[in-house]
Image 1 (cartoon, rainbow, N blue to C red):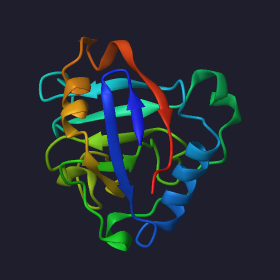
Image 2 (cartoon, rainbow, N blue to C red):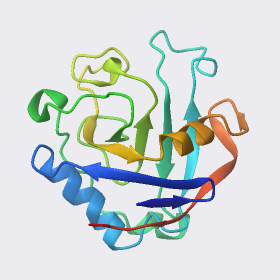
Image 3 (cartoon, rainbow, N blue to C red):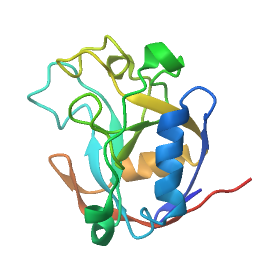
Length: 167
C-alpha cells in the first residue's frame, strides 16, 4: 500500500513470475526507503518531444536521505521471462541500462507495449521489469500524472508518506 499526499495506491506484486524484482522492491518497502520518497516524474503524450516512441508513466523514487544506502542493481527480469506485460496499471522498475535497476519504479497509464522486451522505447530493446499491478488507486495515479510539472519533472513532487505490506 502506497500512501501518497494525493491518496492511496494498492499494488499486488507477483513474486512467482518476477521473484528477483519483487524481492528487491519488498526489501526497500520493509526497510522504509520509500517512506518520505516522492513521485518526481510524469511522462505524458505531450512532454516528450524528442522521443519517437511515446509512453505514459509516473515514476517514483526513495527518500533522498536514503539514496546513498541503496543496494546494488538487480538483474533485469525481462517480460519474455516473466510473462508480465506493461498494461494499464502495471508497476515496473525504472532503469537506464539492462541490469541497472535499484529502487525507482513507475506505473503505466494505459497499455505500454513499447516498454516490453522488443519494444522500441529503449535502443537496447530489452524492456523493463514489470512485477505487479495496481488493484486500487488508479485514480490517484492519474492525479499524479496531471499534477503541475515542468517538462517531465513534477513541480512540486508528489510526496509518498509511507509504503507498507498489507495482507
